[in-house]
Image 1 (cartoon, rainbow, N blue to C red):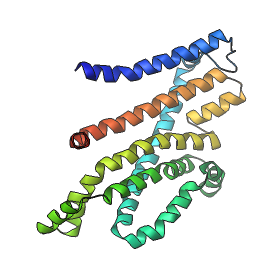
Image 2 (image 1 turned 90 degrees about the vertical axis):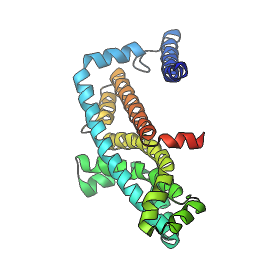
Image 3 (image 1 turned 120 degrees about the horizontal axis):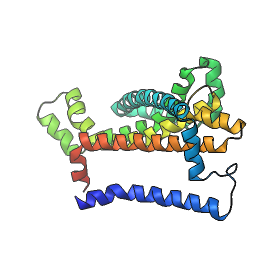
Length: 253
């Protein structure tokens, strides 16, 4: 129990140390809030417009959740198709790598032209940024099933689909969650990129608009909320992994 409390408190200690260092730098060097606001300035900016910031945070969270779920489904389906056939994998994997290598910021204006304004381009941007690590990790997990487990399924007269769903997929789940933890963090980044490119809502839009109005503390308040949102979503996936795969930690240990 004591070790659990110690493990849970370490992130808080790290965050407190970072905030203390940040605060100390602004005080020691006398940095004006226009260039680098102190933590107190950020808190004051949040307290001045809490409803506005929380509303935009909710908008970012909605877009992130929708885009991530689409990336999750698409990534798993693509990974399953890739691992069903070596020929398909060799034919399509270079295309996926090429798609992933394209700077997504360059695609943002084109998505607006193709899809229009609104939530559509934002969701597509999130999917484009988040789905690749899910595909790679899921494909790696599905391809790493031990041969003896496959032979066991065959000896039990399991069909191809039964072996796939009851042997290969459960074995791949720890690796899949590696991709999910990467993907959820990238999904938040994708949402911010989309909101900055089309600043009509979300915390990314707050950063852009506060920059044009020279309100640096407000921009930092939005950035802080984005960091909190990203951390919360990451540990939500971690908690889901521990809930669904309690056996995975025992195997890895």
